[in-house]
Structures are given as structure tokens and as C-alpha cells.
Image (cartoon, rainbow, N blue to C red; front, side, top):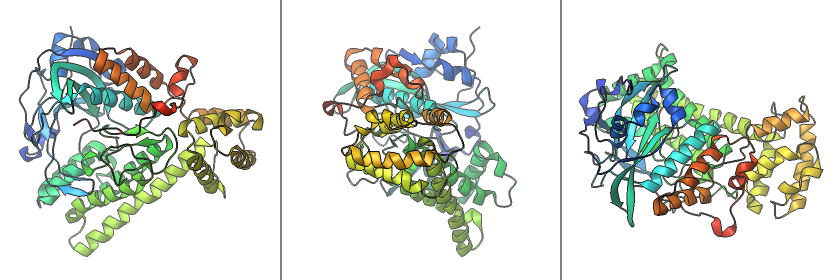
Length: 492
């Protein structure tokens, strides 16, 4: 007997002003494109159910299984620095929560499921291209070991959506530890609804940070905990060359997961100022700006909790600043650890930070491929005879030779054998990332030709990014000049 998800929905136990109840909105002709069998197993959801007519009805939003309570969450947010007092799920339906096999609570959300009270004139639907992009990148991030929302399934709707052109519609089933954002807190704080802010904070503590529940100042600790998770997350983004593209506060999960894969991209050539989001003309969310934007977002989060921190405003601000400082110290530590590991370095020694920064500067000057440099260095551990694949990535190979000599002298100070160092580098420097030109090629074939062969192959290549598998060699190569993707677009 096939059994659907067993829902246990804690968010619906919050007051009605936190969300809007939704009715299902059937689509014309839903067709299952893919199911993430491994994730379904983690969630304890019967894959046979998902592939059944009842499962397809759930994944397309046509009918709900027992226990589902469809709703749209309300939130606000700073969008490119400008505060918008009401946003909310304009094209998403939260079905409910399941408790996975590890005992963790996970949201199931349909993205592209139709209009909600928060659609602000939009159609509430999603085009197939952005849905495929989110599936690919979210699952790649999972394989890279970076906290992220997940993708459980894709269905096409049999209906078209109008963007710059007419495109096939699709729905993504997204899985998250929760969809609560910094912007969720901002929505209630902006209205002076301190009661709601406290209820939300208690809910987040119970769901994400139960260890701080009994601390003397749990709301103070919440600021620090969220800040540290964000700092860790962003440091890990930088370590794989990831650019989120739209770090608005409504896209920042308080659970520390990467949320929303719209105009995101991975670096090919290394440029710290790189921006791929076609509407980010000021470079607000450039690769190099992500750490400072993360801090800015945490300041906005702390502002929402000020009334819960102390009776006097002066004391509130002091406490908030002290907790936000945990962001910078955590980010510095995580960034240092990540890039030291990428170079095979263990315990930090004097000069290590300069060694990292001097390499990054050389890479930027040469526009060297970010991933190929670091993955190639693992082959250079034993001596300069193996340097050629890496040094040719630099405009000035002699400058690289000088840096590499210093690096190898530093490796000689390690207590570990060189073969152990090499293996450790291979475990943190991916051979495969979702390179923009391959993602776009897979999307184009699916959207224009209904051909999912490239999509399936790319999914397999990205599923084990740290294993250099010859079958997928082409997916690790840098793009040719004519293949480079310089701009990505939001799917709304």
C-alpha cells in the first residue's frame, strides 16, 4: 500500500496573521519530469506514492493528501537596499511539514503553484527554465556540502507562462528546514507587532536552535546563532566560487540554508567584482561583497529583536552589536579555514593569509579559472614537474612559479605526508561545479526540444563533485570564449 507524506504542521499553530490559507489551483496537464529518489528516502516519503496519480496531484498542486494544510507565508524585505513592507509567497504554496528519518522537521513547498494574496499582480507561476536551474544548483550545493534548500521533484503543468516570451510552465517541490526568513521578522517588526516577533522568535528557537532555549538571554543568543550560521554559509559560498545574486533579506533563511536560486552563478574566471544578476547594475551582490552584505542583513535581523533584548533602548543596541560581532569573527575563521584547506594547509601559521591572498590576486590579474586552479594544485603537491596544467591558466606563468615555490616550502612544514595532503585537497576542491554554460545548455534542450538528456547527465556529474570521473571530464572544463555566460535572470 502506498502511503503519502505524514504531515505535522507546526507553522499553522502560529496565529492567522502569519500566513494566508490557500485553495488548490489545478493545472491543465501535469507531467512528472523527475523525482529525487534519494531525498524522498531521507524524508521517509514513499517514492511509489510520488510516482502515482495521487503523488502527481500533490506535486502539481491539483489535490492535497491528508494532513496537508496549504498556505502562503507573509514576509517583508529589503530588496537591493530598499525596504518593501509586504512581500510574501507570491508564487509558492507551503503544503506542510514532515519529520524526516533523522527526526528533523522539513517543509514541503510547491514553487510556481499559482497566485496567492501576496502575488502583487503576478501570475504565481514558474517557467520551466528557472525550475530546472534551481533543481540542478540546489542538488549540486548539497553534494558540495553547503547548507541549502533541496529539490524533491519537478512537474510541468501543461500550461504556458508569459515572460519575455511564451514558455512552458513548471512546479518545483522545494524542501527546507523552514522557509522563515529575515524578512518574516521584518514584516512584524515594521508593524510594531512585538508579540508576533516574540512568537516567531520562540518558534525559530524551538525549530532551529533548541540548545539556546534555556540560556539567560535566548533572544540575544538567537541573533548570535543566526549570524554565525550566515557567516559560515557565505564563507562556504566563496570557497566554491558561488554568487547568490540576490541577497535581499527576504531571501535569507534564519535556519542557515541557501535559499532561492534565481540569478545565481558559479565563477569561471576569477573576478572578485563579478556580478551575474542582470539587474544588479551597482554590483551590490558581487562575489566580493557577499560577506559585507551578510553582515548588513544580520544587522537588519537584530533590529527586529531589539524590544526583546532589554527594557532600555541603549542596552538593546549594545546587546545587538555584541551579538552581531559574532558574524565577523565566525566569517573570518571559516574563510581562513576553507581557503587554507583548499591549499592543503593545516594549522594556520604566520604568512598563510598572505599566501592565500597573493594567489587570489594572481588569479584575478590573469582571470584564471577559479575551480581549475584549485583542483589543479592538488596535482602540484609533489613538485613543479606537475605544474604545467595550472601555470598555463595564468597570463604570467613565472609569477605563478614564484608563488608555487613559496607554497611548496609552506607544505614542507606540515606534519602530514604529501599524499595525505593531496587527498585532503581533492576532498575540498571540486572537479565539477554547475558551470553556467552547461546549465544553460541543459535548460535550453529541455525547454526548446523537450530533451532532458543533458539535464540528467549534468545531474549525475554534479552528484559527486569531488571525484574526478573521466566519463564527465567535459563538465569540469572551463567554457570557451563563445560559451561564457555573463548574465543570469530571475525567474519571476
